Length: 423
Image (cartoon, rainbow, N blue to C red; front, top):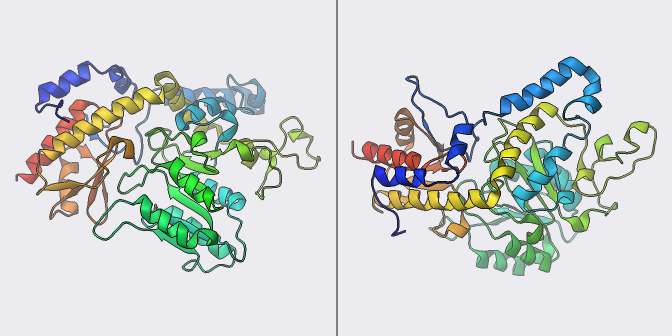
């Protein structure tokens, strides 16, 4: 922390020395009515558009216009195997093997498809464990799975809660829950990085613990993919799901990703929903063959994919492939520690950061509570040209994203916050 300095000149110097600085120019940065760039700090909610995205989508529009149905085989990037163009890059982003990764559907849909396979309740083992402040969609999804199996959603749900007066979750409490209820829990499903606090969980530790008690373990990595080193393969998790429109910059509501550990790759006895895109590629178009399961994560696909959405993902993943997730995480840590350093100058009596202090236990997001503030503070920040987001009851989330945010952005945000607090 002590290596960081106050003042604009220091921020500008850091930007000059940043080997990733050119990537900012490859994104559309939103501007105010006067044409000034806004300080955009919500990559944790919706990533900015890469300038290349338009040409990637236009390529598919042109091929569709010129080739019609023949584009499935004749397009510059043939549509039939299009999802395969994304697999290797996506696998690198989440730390998996290509056979373990597929881009398909949307996030909560993928979570449901995974639970069809990995939530198999019995009379004695039927409960699902999630974090108490899980992202609402996750909670609604697991509750509906419980009801689908005829289980009371209150009785079947176990919540991993923070201790009284604390915001972060404690692993000892998780161990205690499993000691008491381990043989009743069929599935542990945790958000890899909590959307509210920004706490990045130890996926390997949670998986090992869950497997010790015979539970299946999955993660919602919506706030982790493209943000932290997930190392999904090494974590040993049974499955994981994530969206691509936050840190992966693929556009609003774009397709999601799915990980299934390779130990399940050839298990045809796993219960699952299927469709023609999970059928053997060689015989898929014979139409009248009996179902022949594809191995690996591809075997969970249902439908042929939406190519225009995949083109936008490809534009972003090509950039990630070029930079490498390790370099992004390295810059991310520097940016976020600098952000934390500046916020701490405002004084503990003014603000508190509920995100873990240890950089290994968070990504780039900091969740800030301002003493005695309500949403009007957030509104004033917005008026001052800062795009952050507000989460009830009292948190402003800011995520300095390494691909397009600068040290100057971070400096500018804190200066604007300071000015508002001093009004």
